Image (cartoon, rainbow, N blue to C red; front, side):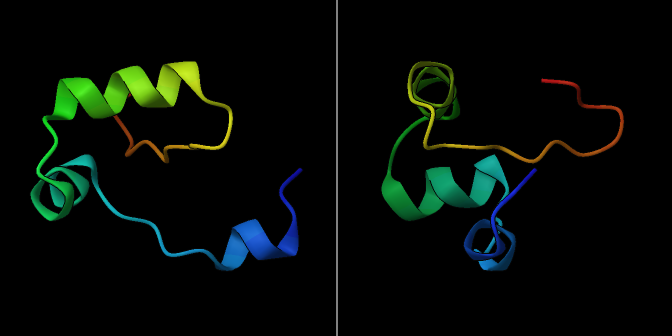
Length: 48
């Protein structure tokens, strides 16, 4: 169950996050696996 604050947080694709941060998608994926604060939302057909 998500908290109301989490539900209101903006959601960005990994491509947009990579462009905005200068990080590569693989580096972002390492972070999402290692840190519980990052909760990616997957599109249908992309289980991760």
